[in-house]
Image (cartoon, rainbow, N blue to C red):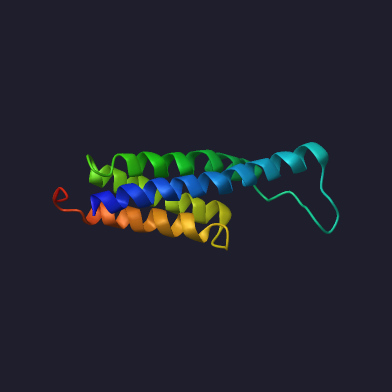
Length: 118
């Protein structure tokens, strides 16, 4: 279960980075060039989007990387990452995989009772 948490956490973090790159870029683009009527508007809280775009993928990758050694801490980091992505970006076609992967990885890391068999 720790190995599954490791793989899912890292993959979820990488997918989260893609979402984060586009979300951060979108908020910066609108801030620099202005809104486009009926097409592109600034989000309600761009600082939240920018902060979560950076930290949620980092927490997921860090949690995945430490899932084998410190499973409880890793599980908490993965679940915090999942909650941050859900709160900032919502659940949609672009975020469903990173949210689901980080959530499953967090649960698996927390449920891992003993080291994985080799």
